[in-house]
Image (cartoon, rainbow, N blue to C red):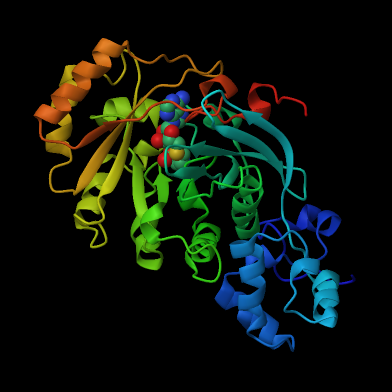
Length: 369
Ligand code: SAH
């Protein structure tokens, strides 16, 4: 092909290597509405967009051969003009507890990780939104990698398709959390377009309450996200004072607690029916004191919310440890006494480094396939 498409698999593929790696646009970069428009403008019947989305996402087919309600000409044209996939699986690790972690590679060979967490009746997919992360949170292994690039919509959506193929036939993905590598709100356009595909009834048809976007606290992007897509919001809090939060989350210097919590208090999309899920990674001797637990209820006053405690998952790239269990219990008890709704997140997949904050890849020595 002589000409580069306006959008390509991994919409954020930069010009430098776009010419090398990308020749055709990828179907998974387009919401159903956007695909309908583009196909229509190229002389296709616009309803083909719904049909193709149904095959790719609801039925999970891997090639156009299976799209039996398209004519042979249309299938040939699809193959000639479009890319169907954006990622390939490089490596899969299965934990004793059922958690599955995969290393996936983009068309430019960039590596990301996704994690599947099967529980009783639900199966949660934890997605990445960037290659690495620029937020440099001091306790997070991904943070130690630094930032390489944003993922495109197709690369976010294809994580769902690829990871689904690793599940046994009796299981399906019921929940999606944007809690893998990267900061979703610094890649908001691609994240929102992917969410439109997750929610579309002809595509993955997930209910909005089954999709959660987690942010470190990029304040100006929070309200626009919630205006555009009706998902759950999780916010990485991790401290009860600016002094401690700055040590853990450098972005706190730009958006301190006052600004972050004030914006949530004022956000019309945060309601009792749609509370904020605050994540609080408990780190031994850093943010696990009783004074922290006592400050939090007042700090969060006026924000419909739940607090999710995550005992620090240790990683060679970072110096912190989880508190001993008795200290965690005490912290939790104090929060409950203060009137907060609190849950304690069990660590999943620690034997395959799949737990929160352990997604690191090359920074800590990438495992060869
Ligand atoms: N950048 C987004 C998405 C990452 S979500 C965010 O920060 O919210 C991953 C969650 O796991 C975040 O709350 C993050 O702070 C937390 N986390 C990171 N490293 C961790 C670790 N080593 N142990 C426990 N939780 C960790």
